[in-house]
Every structure is written in C-alpha cells, then in structure tokens.
Image 1 (tube, rainbow, N blue to C red):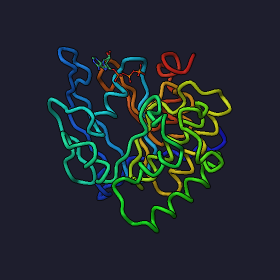
Image 2 (cartoon, rainbow, N blue to C red):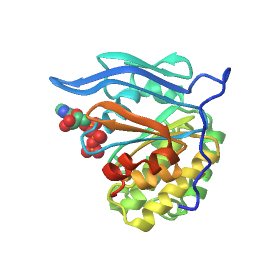
Image 3 (cartoon, rainbow, N blue to C red):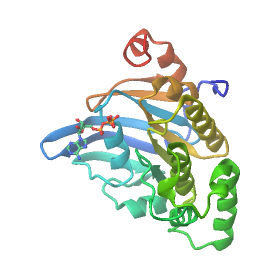
Image 4 (cartoon, rainbow, N blue to C red):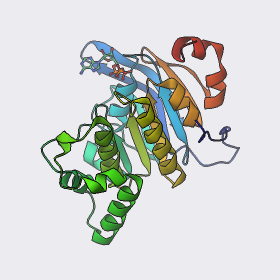
Length: 252
Ligand code: ATP
C-alpha cells in the first residue's frame, strides 16, 4: 500500500512510558485458557497490529482491554493507570474506544442515532458537533445516509459507521477488531487508508487483523499471537520480511 509508514524504532532511553502496557495477562472462558501470559506495549502515536490465525486470542485481547472480559490475572495500564477489570464505560471515559468485530452497530437505529450514541460520555455540545463534522469528512457516505436505518447499510458502510461511532467518544487509543472482515479488496484499501489518516491526525491505534498483509503494511510494530501467546514481535517491516511470518500468515 502506498501509505506505508516509516519503521518505528524502540523508544529511546528516557522516552515516555507506553500508552498501553499489558503484562502477563491470563484470560479464561470457563475451563478454556484463552490468553496465556500475554504482554504487549502500545506507544503513543503508533499503529500496532496483533496478527494471528483463527482462535489465537486476538479478539479476546481487545475485549479484555476494553473491559468486556475480566482477566484472571495480569496487568493492563492505560496512560499509567490500571484499567484491568474496570467497567467498559469507564474505560471509554478514560479515552480508549473499541470498534468490535462484526461492527455491532445498532441496526434498528439511524446512522445519526448510532453516531450520537458514540458520544454518550460527553456533554460538550460544540465539541460533539465538531467531531460529527470530522466523522462526515472522513466518511462522506455516512453524511449522505444520516436518516437511513443502520441495518440497511452495506458491510463497508457499517464498518465506517462503527469506526465513526467509536471516534465520537474522541478516543486517544482506538482498538480495531478485524476491520477488513467480509469486505471487498477495494473497500479494504479504503478503510485502511482511513485508519492511517486517523492515526496521522493523532489517534494511537491497536489493530487486530487476519489480513496480515494489509495490517503489516500500515503498522509501525506488530505482535504475532499463537494460541494465547505472543510468539514474535518487532517492527512491522521486519515481520513482513520474515520467512516464518510469510509462510504462516502472508501466503508464502
Ligand atoms: P478469530 O480471528 O477467529 O476471531 P481470535 O484470534 O480473535 O479468532 P478469540 O475469538 O479471541 O480468537 O478466541 C480465542 C480462544 O477462546 C478460541 O479458542 C475460542 O474458541 C475461545 N473463545 C472465544 N470466545 C469464547 C467464548 N465466549 N466462550 C468460550 N470460548 C471462547
């Protein structure tokens, strides 16, 4: 993709602490051990991607960060404050918002109502109006469909709405779960270039993807997750060039 960014190097000595710092995270679904001591960092300003096969634990990681699942043990710090086990609404209030897998828009509500819901934590009406305009600039198609029932939008439009809704909480860290899922290649390109724009405008991004090619092409750094464990990490360009990663995740 032409929007490839320069490789992000490790933070220099004395650099700021990571924006998101996860250590030794253990998550279970009943007897199923989904995350087995997962640790990762996201630095302010980065796009970090977490790639891995079906069932590796990518969605579980995001759902635990955003407060939808409680970890059994381990720590999650966002901007220096522990958020492990906090409620999902409090985590949005802290500045962290998730675009869930499968979009999860409110199908019976209009596009406008969905966007307004995204701002539920806010009361600054002028700021909300400005951010609504920002969403319309990024996603002009949403503006044309404001009074349309969200459930009747195309898959790509629903992804845009889910992203727009998350942006309405003005997050400093945006978690994206498989934004390419079910979309045609041209639309995937469009969505990924919007992700880069959102990042360049100042929002840090943690991106979960099965489409490792696309994810590595826009990310600064990447982690590979296999059955609940991080098995590789590094600059996205290094992972994209790695023989093992190419064979396992990039189709040769
Ligand atoms: P995919 O790309 O297929 O969504 P993933 O990497 O996001 O995969 P997760 O959805 O996080 O993987 O699943 C990790 C593991 O936890 C899998 O073994 C899965 O079967 C299991 N799991 C996920 N959700 C549940 C649940 N609600 N109840 C029981 N097990 C679950």
